[in-house]
Image 1 (cartoon, rainbow, N blue to C red):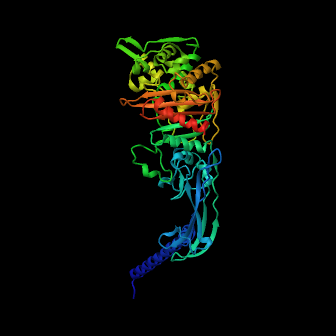
Image 2 (image 1 turned 60 degrees about the horizontal axis):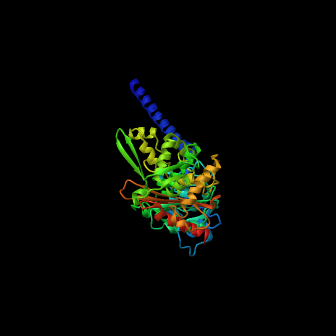
Image 3 (image 1 turned 135 degrees about the vertical axis):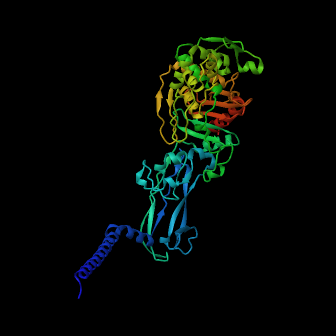
Length: 529
């Protein structure tokens, strides 16, 4: 006979076992609910992913065209066959023999007909970086997220106009079996090609400028009178199809010297000083200066002499000269005195007015700002006071003054075209601002630049050139003994420039001897083909 205690133990044990059984059922039901309802879509997508291959179909990029319609950058179609594999999913091979039409897709290789001659302007393509995968370009979200292996613009016009040039990729959905073999095509969305980009580049001139600067380290920019870029080249250059091969080259072929380098301009800067002196009313067409070959300044720190290049090289002096002759002969002592008369504050003001304290807004990435020294800058950066000698150096384009090739070109173009400060544009229409300079003062400076390229001036390579040109030479000292940057700026016709060019060759010698002949080759091509 069972006792009351035994009955209670059996009753407790049975309810305990029932509870465990009920709890197990509840857990099972909860797990099934989680798998079927809560995570059903997740596991369904995994299953679908195991049997469905999403194959991107690349879109052709738009062409980059020269002003005459010539192709500067295009795309070559390459047919590839899709091969399915259990391990890797799929691959694309160039052997399309025996492939059905639905197994063939078009891939596109970028082609650059001018090769290195257009590399810094056109740019190149590079694969999407890991941190860019699945990201959307906020400037063109309609292009969709980026995926591994996708090519995008990495410099030049390819980068600047990525949203214009890039197309919208297509996609093919293919069902495969458990072995990774194709079962059927579920659907296909064709890609949409990118849009073409028309530029102001003159195809033949771009090629000629590249040939002219080949083998040298420097840069050249050629524009019309409104700032439209006809040619822009940085040397040495690189192969845009394989830019990685020059990453370790000590000559820095990837470096765009035209927009990314700061250089002392030397005497090619003097027309800007001349405009400042005229517009401030410090001098006029009757102003003269007696050149004795040097200026001596006595100060509490000692006596300092500032000489003219003609005195240094030949022991000669210019005697009494006016502004036109001083520009033509590039007389340093004359411009020392102009800088002193105008004063550093007004010189900085006019450099700002002539666009030298801002970029030229050219439509390729990588432009840096000019370095414009001033008393405040020197005190902040060097912890030193500004002296008259600093003003003298700046007035002949030396000292701490450092400009980009495009920056100086823009300022001199404003003189050549009569006072319109224009942005530089390759695939955009440059905006111009009227500086409201007095016509007779601008014409006085232009007359000096015309005399510079006439008999007796410093630009002897253009003495016999027609039509009449205006020019300015520059030989800028560097921090390397005996090494000077060679500069040459030239424009024609002188009434309003059809073409204006600035050439700079690094550490190469005198502007008249090195950069001048290169500018002559460019102008011969344009005016006397």
